[in-house]
Length: 325
Image (tube, rainbow, N blue to C red; front, side, top):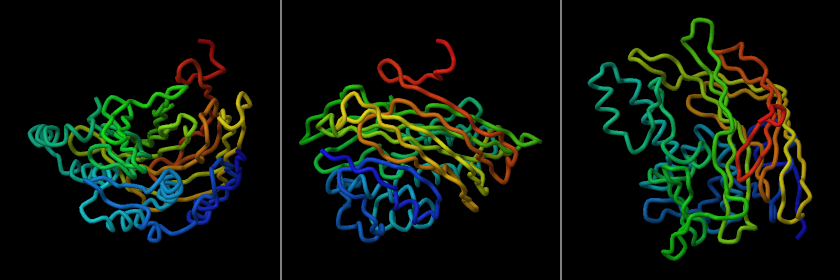
């Protein structure tokens, strides 16, 4: 099968980014608007159902590029549906009102099944990832064709086709997780910037449909009046990000493929929550990624340059290849 490597035009046009991210795709990534995608996405039993894998691949790519007002307007077209992203954002807003140990305990009891409260009293996802939160519901569900996928609280993905549930089991085992978290504080330690690198990997009923995606998830938080941290509105700045990536494609067995992601300059104004910087979807699975660049915010303007190198080892873990283990 011929693999089509091309510029990820959809996100480049909609975000105005200057990048050179080459990617793989079976067919062309759709350039249509989210409004025109409604015929390929329906609401079924409280979760979104995408007509097939190709539609999910193209529409989910556009969803990433529509963070903010456009994404919320698209989601509102499905009456009765709220994405986990929206639910998490609303919970964050309610968390800002917590101002006593009693209200904190009440909040914890109310949302224990939806969010995790970390040791420093900040909030994080209970299941899935920043990417899956765009299209899953409060139960971590999304349907692609006849494959109902459930992102579980123990880090697995359950696939249910025609009522038969199986845990995804491709070779290598699909991996979803945060590869690193860097946290930077401003001078008075009242603002902090989280810069996370994530890798999401999924597959369909055929392991050769396995796909991987690297992305940054960036959030600014501010100190709260009651013992913790909450999401904080800010301007985010991305400069000179360069990430060489290699992956193993099922279409070219034993031949690692390299592509380069570049983001010269981009600003996200007055953004609250987790901002995703997508580095492209690839057929097969990721093997290594390295990178450098500057990511800053209005509240934490002096975060140092980001430099990292990671390689996949064993059954799916990631290590810094420059450090002996």
